[in-house]
Image (cartoon, rainbow over all chains, first blue to last red):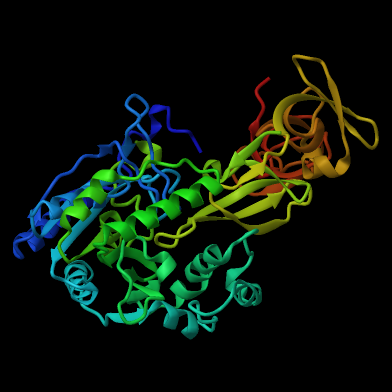
Length: 318
Length: 189
């Protein structure tokens, strides 16, 4: 494959009629939010603080040492704490090394926040938006643990590493097993290879284990799980949402434990975003928020099985 | 020791796995939501040709195989080994028949071939895409037949047998596509 430095890859990978259609799709998204009085905001692509998330690698601008955002979440929460109210953003987000049929290191993210919503209410709204693009069909909600058990795997909230490893070794779809998987990477592998392919066509997975809470609050009745959900459409992960954690002290300790995990793994260790923590200390309103990969949504709407058909210039043509 | 990170993976990249050289045939990036990312790859063993699946945690690094594709001139066959020479350094390499494989039937002395070296030893040989070879045996064509109509087998000077048009005669030079094994045209010289 040519490395793309020559001129041969000048045309867009998406057909021009598809790119015209994409413009219409973006308009549909904006109309959806305009009809609900959710306002559009813009926040910086380059910021001084990065994300400490163990499984997200940021790109960094060399001249200033600033980080390209992996999502607009922190900046938008500062706007919420400042009293802006319901808001959404369509922006570019950047994640180093994420490249494949369904991944491009630079991609278009739709992120929105709704004051006073919990995870269930936001799920309803996500479902309505998705139906505008993919049509109406049965929408299933399934707890993370139930999805594992229905796939014939051990209960992920209870099973130890050895039991999970035995289940993984016995499962043909989990082969070949990557080496030196810890418990949480093992869950990720089983989830992606065994659980997701068995999910119903359109399915919200809810109640993620607490150690995968990211920025979601824990469930008040069962603190083993978090108020986090993801939407899968035909096996493609389309959206990730939280009933947002509002406790700044709890968030700081999650960030610090991310940092030490990154340090142990020899990864770069970005500074904690003190402005976000200060905003949360001053008061993040009770809200739920979700991020949706728009390129993926558009690709599914187009009936494609990769992003290249709906993006003008993917990574290797950019 | 050179190594590659999984985010450099692409087809054609040469890796060492369990002490054997492999080339990546297919690389699929898998990332569950906010979790650990993986690379699921199909790799072909450069010695045996066998294709296997492997999974890596993204960010892992894998030893690079010391595999190099070089252009070399084919010199001669000594009855067992095929001998090649690097045109710039005049360094000579001998390749066993299992490394040459099917390419052997297209090798004509002095032709430039692509030789894959592993730890400095020939691992596989690709003939030039087009070769010019002399017909050593073919049945006489029908009288008056010029350009159209059926075909017949012809044995070439290297031992390869190709289908040629009926008008081709013994002793003629032919241009042949080694990738398809098909006759292209009479050679002009």
